[in-house]
Image (cartoon, rainbow, N blue to C red; front, top):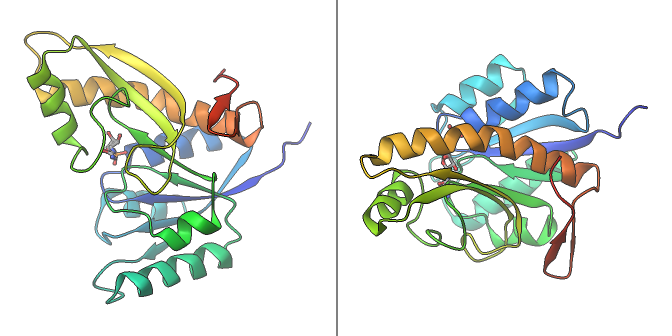
Amino acid sequence: MINKKNKVAFFASGGGSNFQAILDKINSQELSEADPVLLISNNSKCGAVLKAQEAQVAVAHISGYTHKTEEQQAQAMVQVLQKYGVEWIVLAGYMKKIPALVLEKWKNRIINIHPALLPAFGGTGMWGHHVHKAVIASGVRVSGATVHFVDEIYDNGAIIAQKSVPVFSEDTPKNVAERVLVVEHDLYWRALQGLLSSKIYLQGSKVYGDIQ
Ligand code: GAR
């Protein structure tokens, strides 16, 4: 059976290991439902941009350098997303807020991965290493990764999938980050696959169905 291909755009600001992990699953046909058509980045020199170029995925650099105002940035995003016929947006280490205009046009079609077990350790300022620092400072013995829908509030949308990892007393933020990243790479493509194949879906504010 040939699966329907959904045109997917990625947003990334950093190294792009989550982006690459999903591309790998698309290339190996395990995630045959996705067609990666575009990467949007606010950082033209980041690892994710290099990875997109290597994979021949179109890149759009949209930031304060390319477009002065937030409104112009939002318009540019919508324009390029529409140009590529994007149906789903996957945030993969994107460190900027998604403009309201994009949220409105791709409502319930934008997902994010967060490096902790939401609703704990989320919200404004909780990104990247800040999350792992807070996890260690709190003394919790588990952390993990959360895939969730994106709405207008940081890390607030309905939770799609989670996976936990242990936190040990001798851990540093760096090694918690590394341990979490391993599960992120396994979790994100499965969550995306569930959504693209409608095995996972949002009804009201609740998510139904599970990752395979
Ligand atoms: C990942 O750990 C991701 O969960 C986190 O940034 C890292 C990006 O790594 N995202 C956030 O903190 C968003 N709030 P990557 O560039 O190697 O995929």
